[in-house]
Structures are given as C-alpha cells and as structure tokens.
Length: 343
Length: 256
Ligand SMILES: Nc1ncnc2c1ncn2[C@@H]1O[C@H](COP(=O)(O)OP(=O)(O)OP(=O)(O)O)[C@@H](O)[C@H]1O
Ligand SMILES: [Mg+2]
Image (cartoon, rainbow over all chains, first blue to last red; front, top):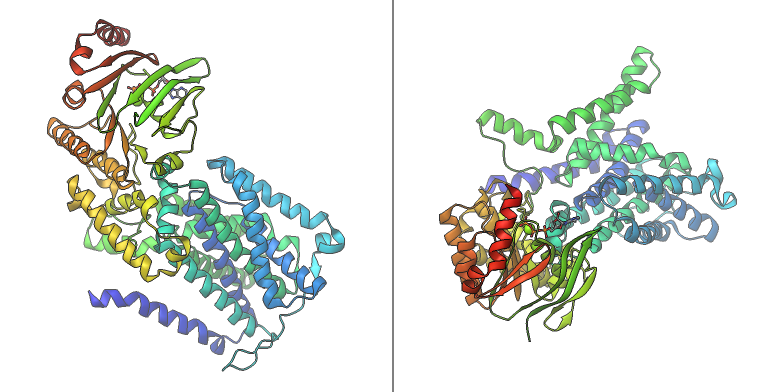
C-alpha cells in the first residue's frame, strides 16, 4: 500500500527534476523551443479541460490567448509597464473579457455554445487583424515586443532574457503554477461541483448549485491562464500576430484534450506532449524523405482523433489501466471520468 | 400556514394546458399524495414548484414566500427539493460523491478554501463524508459507497436519488414516482424509508402510480386530470370518488 501511495509523488519529482535539468543536456535551440511551445500549449489545454469539466466545449480559447498577448505587448510598449506586471494584467484582461461574455454565452447549451464560442474566436481574430490598426498593427500584428526586463531572485543569479533558456524556465514555472491550481481545483469540492454540472445539470440545480456561477468561474479561470500564456508568447516571439492565435489552435487544443484524456489534469498535458513530439518526428521524416511538410500531419491528426474518440474515450491516460486490466483479465468497467474522491 | 401553497397555478405549453388553475396546500409534517392518469400534469407541477419552469399564471408560495419562477438552486436553498421521474444521478461519480454534491448548500467551503485545501476545508470534508455515510446507511446504500452510480441496480439508483435530495436538508421533499420499476420488496423498503423521513420532520409531496403506496402513506391526496384538480381528500374518499374512478377508467379506455 505504502509503495503505491508514493509512486505518484516520486514519479512527479523525477519528472520535475528532469525538466529542470533538461536544458543542460538539450543544447539544440530548436528542441528547447519545442519544449517551450509544449509548455505553453499545455497551459492552454488544461484550461480547455477545466471548461470541459462543466460540460462546455470551447472553441474560443485561442482568442483569450490572443487577448493576453496583445494586452501585454500594448501595456509594455505603449504604457511602459514592466513585463512582470503586464503578464499578470494580461491574465486579468482575458479573465474580464471571459466574465463579460461568459454570462450570456455559457447559458447556451450543447452544440450552440460550441458555435457561438467559435464565432467569438472569429470576432477576436478579425478585431486584431482589422481594427485599431495603429495600435494592434493589423494583419502584421505588433512587432518588436521587448524581452522581459531582467529580474533578480534572491539566491539565484540575475535572469537576463537573452537566448531561449530563461524563457524555458519561465514557461516551466508558469506551467507548474497552472497545473498546481488545476490539480487542486480538480481534487476539491469546486471540481466535484463543476463535474456535477456536466453529469446532470438539472440534478445539480436541485442540490442548490448555481450552475452559471460554476460554468463562468471555470471559464474565467481557464481564460486567465490563457491570457498569461499569451503574454508570455508575445514577449518570447517578440511579436503578437493574429495568425499565432488562429482557429486551428483552438481545434488542436481540443484534440490534445481528447487524445490525452479529459478525465484528469494530466490527460491534456500528455496529449500535448505526445502529439507535438509526433509532429516533430513527422517534420524530420518529411525532411529525410524530401516531402514538404503539411497535409500528412493534418491527416494523421484527424485519424488519431477519430481512433481515440471511437476506441479510447478515456484518452491516453486510460491506456495503462486498460492494458493492466487486459492482462489480469478484469472487466474494465471502473474508472475513467469521475475519479473524484474528494481529498 | 401551509408549507407549500399553489394558487391558480397554470402552465401552458403552446396550446396545451398541462396544469390549469390548480389550488393546493401542503401542510407541514404531512405526506401529501398527488395522483392522476398519465399526462395529467403531475411532473409539470413539480417542475413549476422547483423552478424548472415559470408558471404561465398563478403563484407558488413556500413558507408564505412567493417563489414562483425562482431558479431551482434558489428554491433548493429555501429548503425545497425534488427527485426526478426518470432516474437522474451523477452517473460517473461514486455513490458517496453523489451525496457529497448534495451537501453543496451546507458545505461552508468557499472557493479559496477549496483551492488551498485549508485545515477548515479538510475538517469540513471529513464531517460531510461522515454525514453522507449516515444518509447512505439510512437508505441501505452504505455497502456500495465506492461503487459508481451507473453500476448500481435500478432500485438502488432510485434510493440514491433520494439520498442526494436528503443531503440538501429539505423541509419539503417532492418525490416523483419513487418506486417505479421496483419489485415488491424494494417497494416495501422505500415506503418504510418515506415514513421514516416523515418521522424526521420532513414534509413530503408524493407522485406515484402505485395505489398501494399512495393509499398506505398519504393522509391527504390531490387528484389531477388533464391539468385540473378533480378531487381532494383522504384515501377512502378518493377511492370512492366517482370522478376519480371515471378519470382513471376513461384514461385506460383511451389507452386501450
Ligand atoms: N416541456 C414540455 N413541452 C411540451 N409539453 C410538455 C412538456 N412537459 C410536459 N408536457 C405535456 O404536459 C402534459 C403533462 O405532462 P406531465 O409530465 O406533467 O404529466 P404527468 O402527470 O407527470 O404524467 P406521467 O404520469 O406519465 O408522468 C403532457 O401532455 C405532456 O406531454
Ligand atoms: Mg410524470
């Protein structure tokens, strides 16, 4: 029993140490970049999952990522804010917009919400591409977004944002904080009530749950982290352009969640890691074979998605359990969606 | 003062009068029956009282307060809850977690307490788990507390629906066909639970087609047909009432 209890925290500790020391071994800037992007996508994907725990499938997440990016770039460049304040303000800005649209829009059920969130994504995209061009730069976006100002953390050397390594650690820290919050929420009464809304909103209501309050809260929290991620990426890329936050990103985020598994916080993270590594692999294979990258990966994503939805609704995280069950010959009726023992 | 009072309650779905000009009073402490043929409007009454629908006309008073058209969670907050005719549970939750959601109004755990898992939160969750176990014990569900709700046999699922409702600590509990699909033994056990709830001081409004259950439990019965009240009284009056006999026979003829 004791052994089982410790495998998870130990595994996490090993993983954390691995991620902290990884840049020492991975010296290729390309691969460090891939890792940074995986961290950012993971922050977004766990947000999509938080919204999904209340039963809502959002296609608007890239829009809140964009709002964060543009907010931070504008605050730093036009108003001279410090990046360290602006990144937080960017999260708050995304959260405020989420709050404003959440109340009317999250009332809409099922596929209609899905469509409206899609439309909202389009509105934001169009807004940044075509309006206030002197502020947001139109289709070219905002360019020459400055690096974060150096910070000195007591006990550590001063962190100057040159090269990719400092960004790697910043993204890692933001991801760790995001995951911590998501994990705690998932394990708490808040998470339980969110899931109850998805399971049976009419029953949750008769139990006194204000379902809008929970849907909106989950949405606002998820969008806060998306805004922070957006601020990060704008300064990391030194630019905020509409294309970075296009519709395909919102789609990918859903794919990450579904492939990784929506039953736990770990699911979407694993989905992001596996599919992004696969994508890198494909780029390399394409290069070796001399094919231009593009269509094959998109096709592959589609096929993977269909396979997972049809055959592994619990996602990748459910696979080990299924394999074990297969070998032990146990019926695999248990676990998957609602492992909510409130701790 | 009646605990629940309906005054001229009316609900139209398009041209269909599902509930029409219904007056009814539920007194504190009683088990009040609400019966009528299929489609008479019983479930619609529950939906109007619990806030799922707003009345087209008329009012709902609970403890003297007008609650017509108030949201279900606000109605539940006042101590009025209901179960569903079609088994409605958090199917992918454990039995225990189903009841834990029922404690929502009484958890005294706010968002930040939940996020930071404060000592207060942990203590409260422990207390609530204990209370949940008591409710499960009472309804004979304790042995399957860690089972997923979807895996329970039908009779236990119906009982779990009641368990969730009890966790909200209702003053008035409305049960929509609690023994549907139960065998005679399960039915007897559920009847026993319902009388025990009354002994605990919970007022009950009971919709049920099984006449043995209704006649056995209710001192007062309201009969509706095509949305209108056609009779009210004790079991013996109701059994003899020609209009009631007509409504049920007419209904059957209609079906046959
Ligand atoms: N949401 C709705 N939209 C349209 N018509 C409805 C709706 N809900 C109920 N009805 C209609 O209202 C009438 C009363 O329905 P209700 O479910 O209240 O009957 P009931 O007495 O509970 O019947 P049963 O004993 O079969 O459960 C029926 O004719 C039904 O078809
Ligand atoms: Mg009914």
